Length: 157
Picture (cartoon, rainbow, N blue to C red):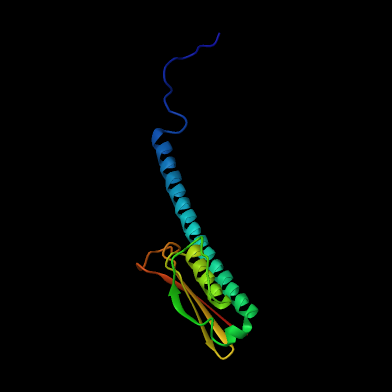
């Protein structure tokens, strides 16, 4: 017959509570680092989205000018950097060029940010389309209160 001892063993086996707490601390620091990385990725993606929108909008006004080439070459589309308020129900009136510019500026304000600005300058047949917006939210480090991003597109009609 075997004898079963109820006395505690001389040496404990397994993990101690301190080892478990240290492992949890290391795991939690790793998870916080992962969350920080995820936040930086989201901010970078947001900034890249704005840059993509600016590119598409610059191509949009260029296509509109190509469709109305005579007015574009006569300087009707020339616009200084202008900011408008987003109006989802915009009903632009006037000439085709005036409607195109009004709709384009409205799209800048609606798709980029409320303080986005756009401008079109012409030298001969070369047009420079400038799109500017506040990219403060997309910055990883908030180095300045106003971080303006500028996209410049040049084309020839």
